[in-house]
Image (cartoon, rainbow, N blue to C red; front, side, top):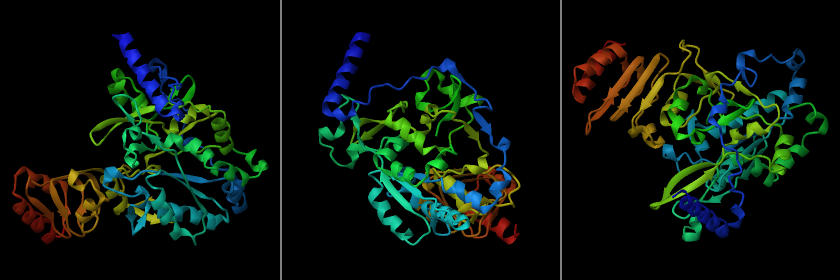
Length: 446
């Protein structure tokens, strides 16, 4: 049986290479992870943030800081559509707060840096074929900004039919659904192939170059390395999720030397693990073969990780995350979200919103205004729940609407855990709950 299975897989690969000769790089060259060699990273390879030395005194001067910033370029991955949040365009144009999108905030951050230090930090956006055209229109609004914005496209690969490994476009799916962007690990070759890498290197003098340098980080054969859950053998998945040594996760924030990127890509030395991502298109089971950018760190000499505090990592991957960043838990300064000092708990509240809030459009229309959550510890909302304006949430709050019934939280209500728990325990109807909330929280002014 084993021989038959091997023969079958070999035949599939043969068909694949015959159909798409350019895909002969899918050869399985990437080394497989040996579970027994995985170790907890030491402080030598994942440096604690609070042990980093402050910059030398000379960098307090604007001119010295400018010299450093003139060596910097910021690249943002802009290929995602945010489909999990119900978006149809680039995720970067979701409004965060005050009418500003993620991309607006990024531009403001870099523009403020350029203005303060008189430098010219450029912004690069790596688009996919899904976001390219929309992004070109969007960036036109920044034409008068104090920032250079460059765009380039990552690669596009054909989805593979699971049944026979043939490319989906060869079976008549010639539209966009037959193709996919191969993960953010493609950033390195795409940066070189687009010409943007050489363009950036040409802007930095040799003298200054001579002066500088979504998984978990592990120590593997003495080097820091990224481990994605897709690389974990089935027998060790539960261990991966539970053991403390896997609690250092990847924030997808990489600082990389441009010369090192060119050296490694030109030498075809980035043999990153291929991550199979199963999908379904019009009832056909397909595979996307992807790579992750963080997986490349083991190929860079003297690479280290930095264990940053949670306050420096604020992802928005679901509507519950959007509630956090739109709330009074944060204020906005020069494009940066700053934690409100009135929040005494160093941890963010735990927020769990039901499927009714999953899409951004549904999320926004269910809130007349975003509630105050400075004193919130945990929020769980399920069912057809609607929030009025000026609502305040404190402690641990659970709001549940019964199936088929609508529950509206009145304007200016203050929901505290103890009283709200008591109301839930009495199994009040939605109407009774509404009246109780209105009476206890509005009329008592809590």
